[in-house]
Amino acid sequence: MPSHADTLARVPLFRDLTPAQLAEAALRFREDRFARDAYIFHEGDPAERFWAVRDGQVKIVKHGEGGREIVIEVIPPGEIFGGAAMLMTHQPATAQGLSDAATLSLAVDEYKRLLHDYPAVGVRVIEMLGERLLGVVRMRAMASERVERRVAHVLLKLASKFGEERADGWAIGASLSRQDIAELSDTTLETAIRVMSKFSKEGWVKTLRGGYVVILDRETLRRAGGG
Image (cartoon, rainbow, N blue to C red; front, side, top):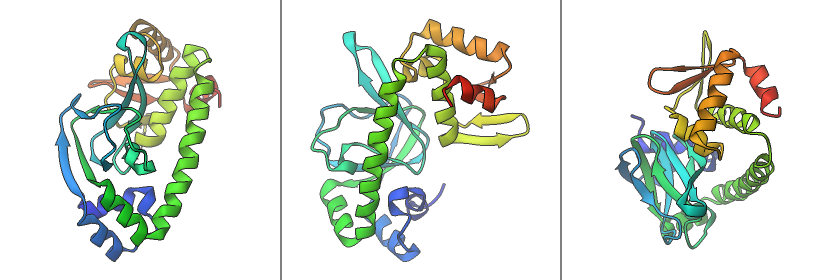
């Protein structure tokens, strides 16, 4: 497993820091481990810590009408999550392990000191805010699209984060149940099963043992997902 400094080097916020600065910043972080489906924090909790994924995957969840769970984001190793990253006072959503996961975190006051010590990180935070806002706009626009388009969009987005090029296609390096795909696409389990079956019959994707999806026809799936 990479060192704390190696993990931080993968986090876009810290890409401008030197190796010596990364090593110093890494000393401020605490490591925690969470089992699959374990809660890291709940929506509405005080945003007391800044979080980054070291290993595994974390899902960010909102709850809709009747308590229905909606997965709004999947966080891979090297990415950050939680309201404290954007200096919110409370968590805007719930974080759970999508798989067994290891995280690095530090108290929000220490995070603020880190921003003061390394102004380049503060600039990256501003850039991140713009990217997150654009992502929200895109997701709201996607909500009105046909479900096949939403599922294709989700698969391509996950592949852009977890993708690994193989001889037979573009493999998503995260285990995904049909329920996971349904929640990410804001649809029902039955519909997700139907759409994935259609994509498989068309030769666009295949699913391996353990829930790992391989995109076989990237261009066709991209057109199905709206480009």
